Structure formats: structure tokens, C-alpha cells
Image (cartoon, rainbow, N blue to C red):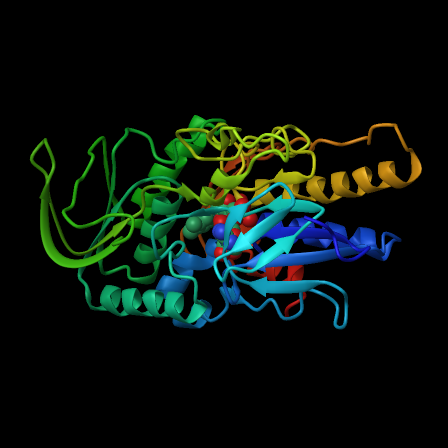
Length: 396
Ligand SMILES: Cc1cc2nc3c(=O)[nH]c(=O)nc-3n(C[C@H](O)[C@H](O)[C@H](O)COP(=O)(O)OP(=O)(O)OC[C@H]3O[C@@H](n4cnc5c(N)ncnc54)[C@H](O)[C@@H]3O)c2cc1C
């Protein structure tokens, strides 16, 4: 597809941790001289969701107002950059196709489309108003309930159970997890995993391990259920609840990739671009999608992140911007010589589990796993990093 302008068009799909980090790094490069770059953000939502704050938003109506941040101030006023609110449905080697039918050409593409978790962690509806309504309804139902079951003891399940128990200490909260260890991700210490369990039990959450609860009708799409239920574990324990939350499963957003083929190879099998199990896009260490020099991917949707975190997404994605600039510099100044591309630096395995504004468990390199509430509060629990997201969006 022919370019109609001399601007180098960089299309970023997805305006969250990875997409915004890519854009901020590009904006810095533009400021320092690379003026001919136009950034086009394509984002399906009308505002940026800050998922780290989702469970505080569930229990605190005031906090809920803060977890949707407008895109209004992202780009400087009157700049050549633009935001298109639409969903990318197809990716081709030099253009993307949107749900509206619009075609957007690019010189470079950054795929930062992340992942979905069951509501109220993330949302499958796109409008912020509808998403907020889901959270408000769940809050009302939660307030009326006496006993709560959370299914799934990953980081989300631990935080959800903790936030609920912290906000409603009189409610009976039970966390049911299929394996014997909470937050059982690779690369994290057993001290953290055991610590999460002790911490939740100290808060008063009843944690049931080694039991895969199957609750009829509770699934990814219907992840909040208001029903009076009695669950009996294999060893005869009875768990009563009148509201249930599913906190299991992560789905990466990469279905658009099935149309991507090299320009000269129409018979190319696009299914080789993603992993069959995780559906994450396969990228090189330069974050280029395998076989495509001008297409990059980072964040939860790409396989560079072994554990999907905002910390990893935000720290890796600037490499996309740096490599786009390196490719442009090579084109203009060092004809014939390959660009000097970089790889993301070392990515620390950081895990901060917040279980209320004052409490949490922290695992970080150098300081190790800490159960000090003051450390958790300072690093995450107090405002759930909403300030960091606001500042990346130039929002006060
Ligand atoms: C409750 C909760 C708490 C968490 N706490 C932490 C924490 O404390 N620390 C941490 O590091 N991580 C945390 N995480 C994980 C973190 O939120 C994710 O790893 C992070 O959101 C991934 O960022 P991303 O930019 O890759 O994608 P996402 O944040 O998933 O964003 C993807 C963006 O792309 C858009 N999009 C998707 N598909 C399309 C399309 N086809 N067209 C246009 N736009 C599209 C979406 O609307 C969205 O804006 C938490 C997650 C949850 C759910």
C-alpha cells in the first residue's frame, strides 16, 4: 500500500502499559530531533483502564472514579499525532483494517493489545461507562452479601479476596484454589507464595487449597454470580456463599494476527506467528514479530513476557520505539549497513500483592519478600499505582 505522506507513520495498537510506554519513548525521540514521525494510536476503548486498581474500585466507589483515565492529554495539542477509537480486526504487512472498515497504512506497527481477565479485573465490553456499571452493580451485590467465594488463587484472586475482606471484615470470604500453592508463577520465590497464604489467613480469609471448584454458570464471560450456593469439598468441608467471583484465566488479544503474511508469500501460514497454547505473538529479542522487520509486539500479547505484568510491559516496550528510531537512522544515514537494534534490559521478577490500602506482600530483587505493610503501602497498596498511569497520560 503506497504512503501518501512523507511522514513516517508509526501505528500503535492498544493504549495501555506497553502502548503508552512505546508512545512516550517515541515522543521523547521526536522532541530530540526525529520530527518526521507521526504516531497513530488505535485503541478500542474511550478511556484507558488501569486494571491494577480494579479490585479497590470494586469495594470503593470513590476510587472507582479514578481507574479510567482519558486519552485527551496524551499528545501535545496541535501535534501531527492522532488517536483513532476503533478495534483492529486484521493486520497486514503494511496496513491494518479496523472494525469500522477503515484502513490505516503504516511504516511501523507496534502491537500492544494485551490481555483480558474475568470482570471486574478487566472487561470484555469496550465502553468505560458500561465497564463502570459492571463494577458498580458488583459492588452493590457485594455490599448486600454475607459470604463471598473467590475461585482462583493467582495474584488477582489473592488481591480480590484481600480487598473484599479488608473492606468488609464482617463478611465471610473464602478463596478456593486448585493447586497447593497460591500465586504459583515461575520465577517467584516460595517465600512469597507461602507468605501470600499466611497474609490472607491473618486477614481472616478462609483459604481452601487443592480443590478445583466447578460452579455452574460461573465462567469467563459470567464471572460474577449472585446465587445462594453450598459447595462441598472432597474432604467434606462445606462452603456457603451468596456471591461468587471467578478469578481464573487470562486471554491474550491477538486474533487479528491471522491475516498477517509477508508481502511476497500469500501461502504463508499465519498460525505459526503465535503459540498454540497461550496465543501470544512470537517475537525476537528486538521485539520484532518473527519474519517482519517493521512489526513489533510487547506486553501481555507477546511472548517476551514470561509472566504478564504491567511492570514488564512498561519496561520492555520502549525498546520498540528505540528500534524504530534505529531503523530510521540506518535508512537515512548508513545506507547499506544494518541498523543497530537493541534488546530490552534485565527484567526483574517483581510481585506486589495489595490486599487493601494499608496491607500487602512485596517481593522484589535485593529486598526479597517483605510482609511489612509499610513497604507494601508505599510501593503499591495506598493508591495502586494510579499516579504512575496518570502521569504517563499527562493527566492530573
Ligand atoms: C486486577 C489486576 C491487578 C494487577 N496488578 C498488577 C501489578 O500490581 N503489577 C503489575 O506489574 N501488573 C499487574 N497486573 C497485570 C497488568 O495489568 C497487565 O500485565 C498489563 O495490563 C498488561 O499491559 P499491556 O499494555 O500489555 O495490555 P493491557 O493492559 O491488557 O491493554 C491492552 C490495550 O489494548 C486495547 N486493545 C486490545 N485489543 C485491541 C484491538 N484489537 N484494537 C484496538 N485496541 C485493542 C485494550 O482496550 C487495552 O487498552 C494486574 C492485572 C490485573 C487484572
